[in-house]
Amino acid sequence: MIVIENASEILTIPKGKSGPKKGEEMRDLGIIRNKNIWIEDGRIAKISSSLPEGKYEKIDASNKVVLPAFVDAHTHLVFSGYRDFELLLKIQGYTYNEILERGGGIYYTVEKTINASDNKIIEESSERLKNMIQYGTLAADAKSGYGIEVEQEIRLLKIIKILGEKYPIDLVPTYLVHIIPRNMDENEYIDKIISRLKEIRELSKNIDIFCDKGAFSLKGSYKFLKAAELLKFNLKIHADEIGYIGCSSLVENFDFLSMDHLLKTPEINIKKMAEKGTIAVLLPGTSFTLMQGEYADARKFIKNNVPVALGTDLNPNCYTENMQEIISLSIFNMKMTVEEAISASTLNAAYAIDMGDKIGSIEPGKYANIIIADIPSYTHFGYHFGINLIEKRIKNGIEI
Image 1 (cartoon, rainbow, N blue to C red):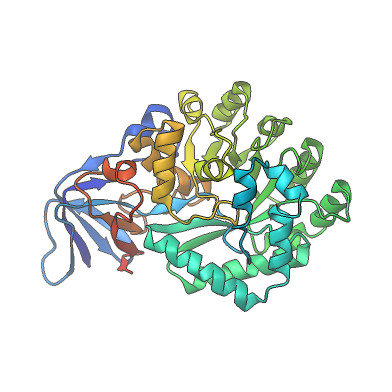
Image 2: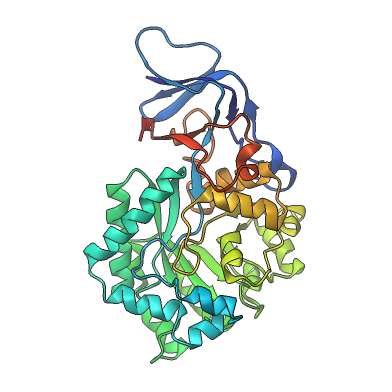
């Protein structure tokens, strides 16, 4: 038995009526003060004013805030090579697609990744994972996408599995159809991936496609998602980031686990997402690093009762592992309240990676994925930015 004692604030993050929190529900953090959390066999046993009899391990949380560990709903964890040279191009005003055309962007990372050994990718990705854990993230989506060729993408999924077994973090693999190879047309490439979907399904239950200007078309994305739906993948989509070509309108056709980015999503599609219960994964770190001054309209999603989750979009273009920084960006640049940002970084993000029934809140029966912040109140998230506020991390009941 392990007991987290005397927490000044416990943010339990109760689920919403339909599971993930939406609208006003996102502001309810379920705060309990000066209580104790009992942990047994890796799971939360109860929250109580009392303490167990006999011997038990104590974790003192006096004058500290206890909350569910952060869940990063969108990462491109596994890759090799960096793109720091693109910063100058961004400062000079080059757009995402212009950098891509100049040999940067995704194609640059693909070349570096396919030429790197498994050990090199594991070594570089391990450093990112350690940073994620240090800043309080104990579960995350982890996408492939920088292999392009199916064999290379399968290789990356296998590396994600190795990393998840090596470190105290739940990694949920997602096969990402990221970009069209230069020597192949869209339809040919999609057919090639569809022919391997049964094999991919053994390594990943989630599938994702980048539908946008300069990426996959609406027609091609529909064809691919329809094939994936037949094999019962959880469907995800990168949509409406660079421009609007109708990608988010696919919510009419599919039951998406999440739709991500959504900078240019029209309100009619937002309302359809609400009807379907589709989670919007917003990525303010990407907007920040693109330097174009445009962020997803979080207030419009929340107003329309769409569950909102947050992610880092960790990748060579948006190189951060820190969900605390994402909370800050969501408050300052997307006008989310701190309560909404915390809900979006815990419970809703857990639902966005299909783990909402296991983690993301502090309630009896769930795994004890918990972080302790050395702050006087949860309101210091976002407010006190640029440093690590997390003092302790507990994964499945074990302090790490």
